[in-house]
Image (cartoon, rainbow, N blue to C red; front, top):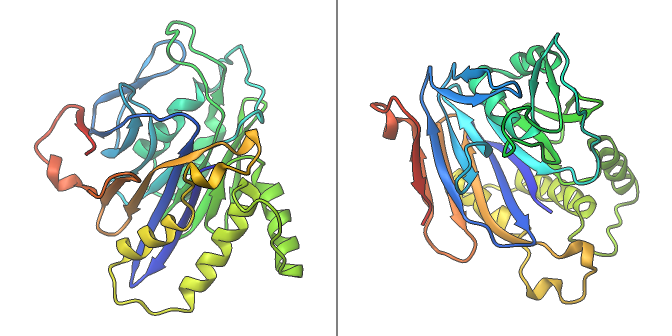
Length: 295
């Protein structure tokens, strides 16, 4: 039940997310330089980076689950469980990929949301690679945010990508973005929030409420601290799950923040005090992939 939202304060756009899963996973930081073979399509054709990118991956994997590029474009995955019927056969007229590769592909090829809109129709998403059994699709939808705090949502439908303008700068897990918006509009009309507050639908609405509250307050803290404190309000602990259904048994494992102006990436495990911080300047002399373990 991951929650993602962005804020714009004092000329800075920041995208924050919680990572919520049933099982405990380890994550690691990845940096990819320019002109580096970072991925392959489903035929095994090599893809090369146009822009530097960095962010979090599952340990021992290279596909980012949230991150930033050197142009200040921010991106994040959220679970879209049981919502996609992946195509099995690639088509010749497009670049054929698995869904796990999409965040990397957009971040390393796009400078702006307009670039994403132009690239999306050229991609086709299939179930798995034809040559690599470890390259298979997962049920994700995606949020991208630019320096001006404008956002897009991408969802897979019949192998193609549907692109939605996201004026609320919020995303959570399933259901679809359009259903989230309908539920939010019902809340705005009635201003009632009842039942399990941890469902993706309720978390979407709570994120809207949180962003409205942030707009009304003046804070003396850094933007990163403001956003970390907001993300903590969405954390789910094991104790919170005691009276919830089996479908809601996720706990929050980490928070991450990307800053489109300072071009920095922040990561914090919920059970540890340390905040990991990375800048592209940290890797200015690197010409190959760099992996760092979060602490």
